[in-house]
Image 1 (cartoon, rainbow, N blue to C red):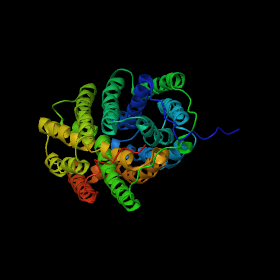
Image 2: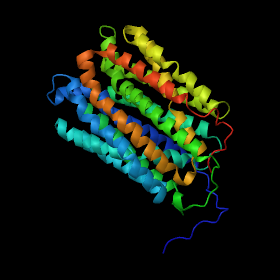
Image 3: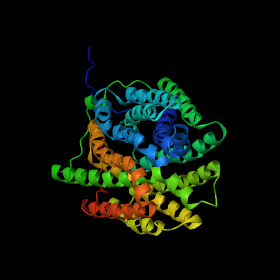
Image 4: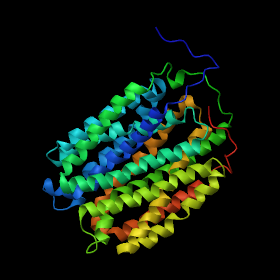
Length: 404
């Protein structure tokens, strides 16, 4: 028998601290797991008999394609079936896929394992973030802290993979986090109450925003997210090898390089908390444009920089890349009713991440043929396109109440 629809006065209970913590940890898991392969690719390529890492990189492209395309069914199931059960699928699926990747013996087996990993990873953004936003009164701050958590996962991928490769081997870099994800799923199941009604079946107040404005915001948001995702994937997947190339003769130890890369991501991740705090107080459009305006010159300066100069520029351009991430989720929180946020986020993610998955497939061949200088100039051009797109956002949606 189907449960009755909730009354119009139905109010979602606030998440416990444990549930909120695990939802943020899940974001770290999501990004960490997707970058273990890119961080350890040189060692994996040698183990699988490839002459260079560039030849192996295209085998990871399907993971990022599924990461994007899988967001549509993930978002739909999150709204119609429930966000808690989907998060359980996320934790256990990520853990199992990582363990499978650790057991692979050749490139095609790794490609299959990474594709599964990408499919399960597609659950988090359209499900986990709307679950966090269900009861928050400060969407900017909530998304900022969540973004920090996700990018600390990127930092952890660089740090833990570097040390695992040095002391335990690349397989441990997948296996240990995989077991951790499964443990998180067990704890999440125990402390997070079952949902009495799926989001789509709740009765909630709608945001009275004209349909034309919502359509305009969605178009700008999706286009900017697509170009922004290109920057994100090109940089996070290419940064380890860029640092390795430009630090040649200065720092060569894999663990030391991993630590340097972790510092880049840890420092850059703090930008999301600052941006989240600002978004609850000031004009979204002005802050967004200010951050995007930093990207083209920083990428151009990094095109030919080397040594510690490159390292400083890497920190700065990653601050601008990570600092731009919270905006799309804040736009969804302000303009989209909670009952359909997962589906809207899923469509947006499928388009943007589907396009950006091309970055992973092209990264190795582009660097092999043209080198990192050409890649950095291309990133500057992509950043300029993002800046031009965001200029078409409505003047200032700051006064709009969050969708309830």
